[in-house]
Length: 150
Image (cartoon, rainbow, N blue to C red; front, top):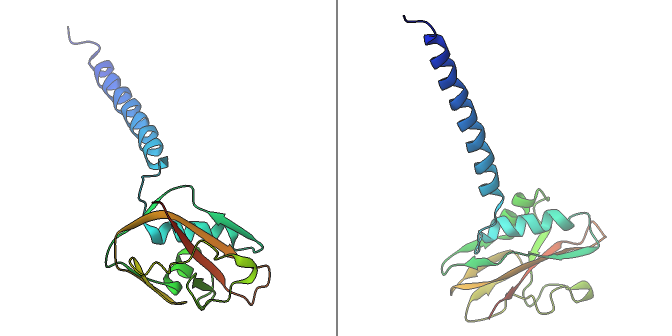
């Protein structure tokens, strides 16, 4: 009596589909969590995306980790955010700061950063939050700043 053999294969197929569905749900939940010390370039791009229409500033909710030796260009941040090249500057001394958007968010910590408008070199490990501001005027660049958590 070999009846019902197809039913065993059907049960196995159902189990595989259910397991796959559970795996998809778990992976989507895990990818939704933001790890502490997320990649600075990604966070800078995300923050600029929030404010690129202009007139507002945004500070990241997550802490970013800058590692010694990392180098960033303003154009790389602009590409990450989908903004025209040349329309992003880092908050450093010498940057035109309309309305004090860089106050308290400058990369001018001499022990941790070598900074100018277009490039940022990290010279010591540092963690903190990223801030981005875009002006209402489309001809003025957006600025990216950073506040260390000490």
